[in-house]
Image (cartoon, rainbow, N blue to C red):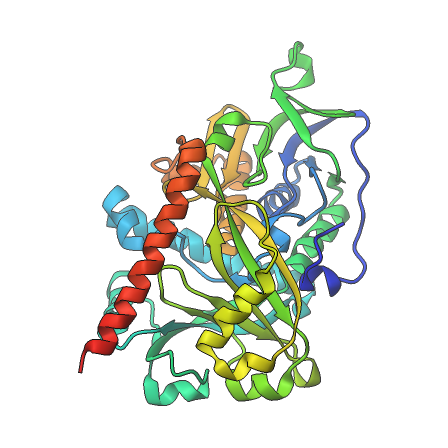
Length: 434
């Protein structure tokens, strides 16, 4: 049903949905049952719209059910770079929408009564070189530009959070949190069922076209064994491909890797007292967190990216090496599971949220910051459909553009290697400073 991840192994019972094998008519057809599709369908149904949701595999099968579980504001593209493109006024508006997406996840979890989905609060952003002025500048920048307070933690106080000689200082974002990503996706699906949304799994969309008769609605969405006639279609496919070639050509599939440990309470209590999100500030850094409590406390560690779709045979050992380079104390920790997933990146590193033509919407490319931006996209698209709201136009400068095909993937991989080199250079230079 899902890949063998810690999330799938701890999911418990989930609702199963049939494949589409008939011809049906609805108001809106949403394609893709990841977070973006699930949120869009939920908000449309909350506003009285009839919705059908199609999924090529199973609910939460792709990145939505495999990711690191961090929920925070922002985008994969740095805010100063966004400002260079659209100016500070629109950058601040975009950031506020990303905050709205983050808060939506927390609010929805509370509404659905599945509080056990939230596993920890706060995000510790750690610096791996001694130029701590870098973090002070970031702290001041967030305060001045966005009126956001991040707590600065200097090296003597870091032991209260993590115990590694690699780190020199940190910023703490108290509004972030982390979740069980697959449980959240399935909780959204359960809520959709209660709202009379029809969900079909194993129903890959193979075509979107305008029907021969206007009486059948604006769009005809076809699967291998059925079809949906709808006035609105919202395409929420991503790195695993979909039925709209211009969107597929705009996407660079990027793989990332995650491992989970066996219960290791003694060593984790000693090494990582902090129970929130943890990541370093490197351009190509690690991200990790502990989950569970008492005798069931475990580590989930993610890192590395590549444009290769295949999972490395020595994945667990690769990440174990990364872990012990940062925390030598973890040498004896046992890893239970290792898995990979594909994130969808656009060349501009921003979500693609757009109205292609009347009744045809796209919400995609959430790689690197997907938990808040998928919720944000679902809100923006549903509000455009139900209220004729045009805030989605904030993303017009970040539309679909060719990502370069195979050459684009090669260039992304080369850029990742370049960033790794710059990270290592910064650490060496910092060590050389007296």
